[in-house]
Length: 199
Image (tube, rainbow, N blue to C red; front, side):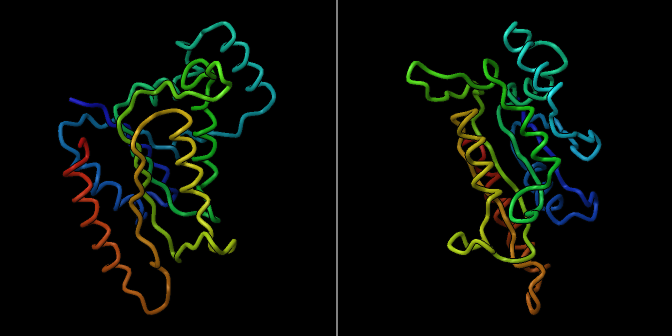
C-alpha cells in the first residue's frame, strides 16, 4: 500500500468546487493509503524572524526529527502528493504558501550539490495539483497569468523528481458557461488520471 498525502487547501470547505474535483481523484487512486492534511484547520502563519532562526539552528544541528519539521517529514515520506486549492489572485491561497514554506528545508527535503544546484531529497513518484478557476488562464497576458501552476511545479522540482500533473476545471464563473458540465468533464479527467496514477 502506497502513501498518498492529500493536502486540502480549499478555503470554502464542503462548498468548494476544487474539493469536489480533488476528492473524485483521491477516492479512486488504487493501492493507496490516504493521509488527509486539512490546511484551514492548521491556521498557519508566515514564518517570522524567530521561526527562521529556529529553523536554521535546528537544521544546522541535524535535528530533523523534531516537531518543528513535522510537515516537511510528512511530505518527504509520501509516495505521492495531491494538493488541492482554488486559483486565487493569479496564484494560490496564502495558507498554501505558508504550508509550502515549511517544506523547503535544506538538509531534509533538498540539498545543494557540488555544483551549487539544488537536489531534491523527497523520493515520491507523483505530485498532482488540483484546482478550479472562475475564469481562464493565459500566460501571455499578465492579467490572466497562472502563477500557481508555475510555482507548484517549481516546488515539485526543487524537492522531488516526481511527475507533476495539473487537474483543472476553468471558466466556471464566465457568463453563459455551464459550470456543472465543466466540472463533470474535469471529473472524467480525474477518473482517467486515477486509473494510470502509478504508471
